[in-house]
Length: 344
Ligand code: NAD
Image 1: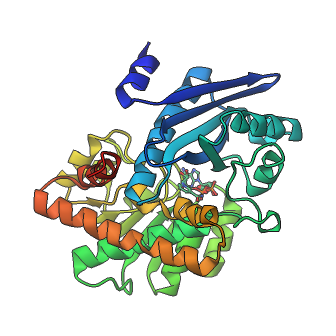
Image 2: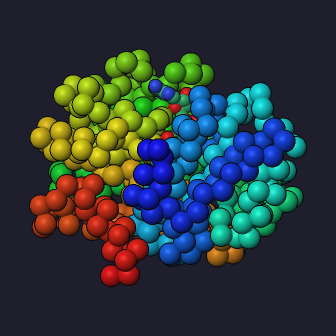
């Protein structure tokens, strides 16, 4: 079966199935080489159990790369729950998830992701100690999305500096796809630095709030192909592919969404178009970096912001590798992650 091939190929350490009562959850631990595996819980109405398994395998591998490249002493893991968060999420389910996480004895530390909020984590934490990103009233830092946005913002500025010789955003146009938690905070930061921000969302209320702040709204069909300096995907993955790439009119792609390239090979098409791609697992590490500050204890927003600023150095490093070794930015980012994993 293809899925067993994938586990072998990517060398996942451990996959656990939490099939109990009405709960269908899977935890995949890709690597604990650098520390306990850390990654959020995603609750999604997966069309099949196979698709949920494929997703958790892919996401946990991405967490290994993200945590390693970010210089964190954390491994990569993820949990997926099959179900519609709007209909199927209940206290009973969250408590069962807490038991499931606890049963792994700290090999896996959980956090929020799509479909799971920090309030849900507070319920999960009644059954397990291995949770980060709890609401401030529970001693945690709460939603880490503003730090993800901050990391993307630093990455955009560093990429602009590389291409134009100055990191100033004045007169630069950034197109943000998705004005949710990450996209909206990012738009705010960009506007503060006088960038022209174009945005879109499929939810009208999100567009309205962004428009009031100064974002120029276009339709979801237009955003990817809007002429701009930076395209910032902050909605979903797989949107950079052989169909969309020939129509792109940006110079840089740098955003918060996970797995923006449909396939790794798509980087070659981007290079041929002269588009500089900052790999997502480097640019969107701000959230996990801020959570690592919470794990160290004594969280303050200032400490987290300072640590997230380190993403600038990592983007500079990957651009140096890209330039000097004449490899793609994706290869450069993977080289950085594997150098840490292989102890170089
Ligand atoms: P979110 O759900 O708050 O925001 C996503 C927004 O995108 C929503 O407002 C949604 O309506 C919109 N959207 C969905 N499809 C769209 C489309 N086709 N066109 C335009 N808008 C569309 O999620 P988020 O927390 O902001 O995360 C955004 C992305 O960043 C996700 O891919 C997530 O996995 C990734 N990410 C988030 C974090 C974090 O800290 N939240 C960290 C790392 C990666």
